[in-house]
Image (cartoon, rainbow, N blue to C red; front, top):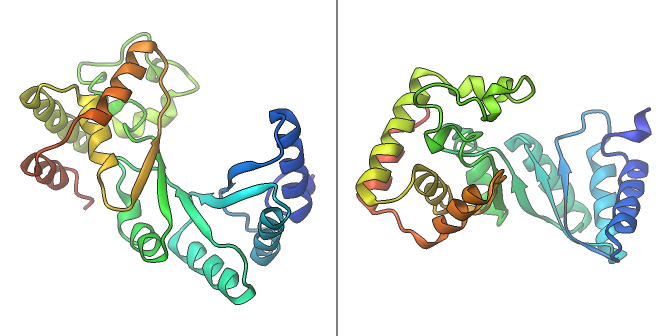
Length: 228
């Protein structure tokens, strides 16, 4: 039913209370609207989020995968009503998917909204694991995940992955480390959501925090991955 999904006040309040019970805590640090709800008035959703902050159940609020127009509309409502403002955006972002740079990122930077990006290594494609085919133990080899990864296995992606691999080899890093460092240091990005499947992957992810990309390398990667 309609009240079992979306961003209606009823569903938001029930979801928060259920989460607090499962987590055995009295507040949530960051609560984000996942996707835009076209069926619920935006002011209703924003008022519910503001009430949660005033009740002490939520400290900060954000959203995930909204367009610049949707973000702008929400900011206007928040300002007009004195609601607490968004602090975070959770978009997809990587060298293979730079869509947010056109409108979303500039708007968020001007409004003080940080980016907690997901899929920073493009479903693992930027690690170079698919350069010579699809490994049997990879996500792309499974029926469930293959549709998410196949769009990245094209000529443009291959050129970018090759550039990342060459840069990694020259710097003595792994492609994973280079891809994550590139995302981490992009203006406006606060952090990345990563999904390690093995201990080795987690070690590589953590190691990326210790590296710095030379400006010449970053510029080259910017150029090769530029959105047409």
